[in-house]
Length: 152
Image (cartoon, rainbow, N blue to C red; front, side):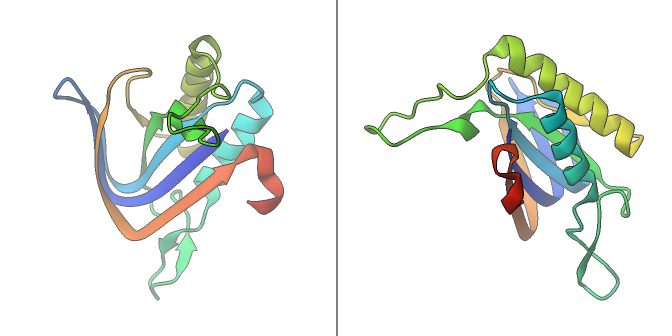
């Protein structure tokens, strides 16, 4: 799994000009699922999301997690995080999981995050042409990869 985590003041996702999910104060998480990903990978990454101390404390230091600030998550599936650009100019997405694996894992991860935070997780629509509008706070943007846990 690969993820791009952005600390945001606000964010929303729309499909066909209809908002499917929106938040204030929290994380916009773009998640890419690879064919080899497991439930253990999903749980490891979800735990990282809810425990990352990337929100400012009263001294302006990044010492608080999304749990600490009672923040929200907008969770978006994005297979393009697995783009391979080594050959030519047209990206290959061969490493991205097929929809029959990726969609259930995306939903399961959203449910798991909801349980961890004890609140609803806002979503995009899997496989749709989504428009994301966000106000990055900081900016704070973090990239994670379950295939490289030692560096994250």
